[in-house]
Length: 354
Length: 150
Image (tube, rainbow over all chains, first blue to last red):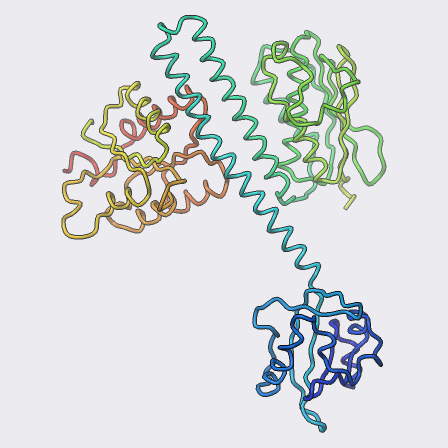
């Protein structure tokens, strides 16, 4: 019965007698330490203890037998086990004592925590990256405010003395600090995106697109843009994040069709597998040179000079789009030609996909 | 109106200069008392000991940065809200941070408003002007804090 229990335990189990010799092990222990059962039985348990701790181990062991309470071993110190090939692994070990006819038996449950430690390290380093990015973005903002503030004050208070050229320079400082602010904001947003939890739910992308289209139209009521929006288009997505995707794509379409009287913007779906939805946003605007298609989704890249499209952003919109879609397990790509409009595709899990 | 003072808790000298300039430019002539860290602000707002703080005018508005030396802005806010003497003083958090956590924590601890310092010069000046006009002119002060009852 006891042996059967031992075999059924999820952890590696090693039982030793009061003299420190191994009495029983389970198959998990054989695997963990790389020994056959016969090689362990009758041996001092110290062969499973890393060399560095071997000398002190018998003392600790005697201490436990003198006061055998069920407890984790090591009192918070990092523990390790030693395999047959002399390699070691970090371990969590808990001890309990069993009274038997042959005297007291000490049962040790040993768990290899290599993977747990790795996860912990990863979490720690991603947290410190997080706080690094936060403090950088916070600390950079203050000097930028000073740059923008004092050049603005120069312009306002001493604009007359500066002359036209001097004012131009000060204006450039204001503009440059503005741009750097946006870059910092983007960094912050990226880092937030990468750690944000996804709240997946069925979202009608067509409905969201229609709302955004309405806002765009209200923002510039004089423009005539023909919107064609398919709805409903249901997909599993984080509503807030996917709205950012649609917002960025439709903003772009709106912006790059600004030169046309017959502007048209379309949101729809392309044929795809059952499990995924393939959406696109298509416009008949300025388009892009397909040679640079690969650069489109990289942060801080712009294919259009700021002077052609004055409201051109920082070149981070499409990078965010890619980041969000990839967080959802989807893909983005674009097709287009100079002067012939652009189509941006992205895939998501369908409503029934997950 | 000029008798009502503004407590500006700000450790960055540039932000201080630009805030003061914006007040001046916008004819907000209230006295501004500068506090350069959280401990200084608390010592002013919540003086302990006998009569140490008597005669210090109670501010009509506290503009509070979050990232402060010694005692942080959130802690200043927490202690202000825990004390009868400062519980009702309007506090506007004025900071660089737009972290959701900071915004939430500020409101949870009783901030009356949360304003992110704009980087852009004219936006910053406009934000300071709006704050001054709203909190010192438009907003009806808590009666016991108002100048009329003094």
